[in-house]
Image (cartoon, rainbow, N blue to C red; front, side, top):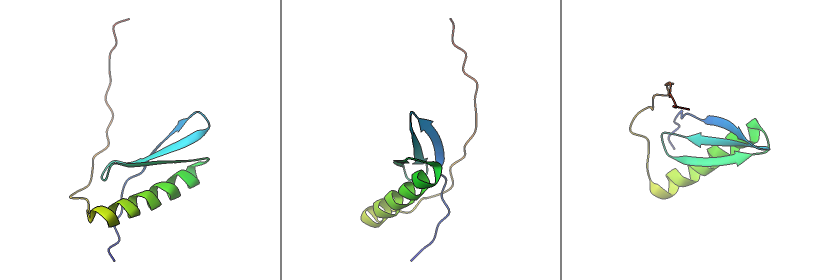
Length: 70
């Protein structure tokens, strides 16, 4: 058994919290922040078990500015 620290990116869509793991590409949701992260953890573990995959490295999360001509 290998333990890995992964990233969870969380945002709210309507009444749900959506959680994404950018290293693996898994996505899940929950009624609150804690449930969304727990569901993402479960989905990621199941995916990695089935795919026998592990992340190659850590993702970098940054921000950028987009300009829209109105």
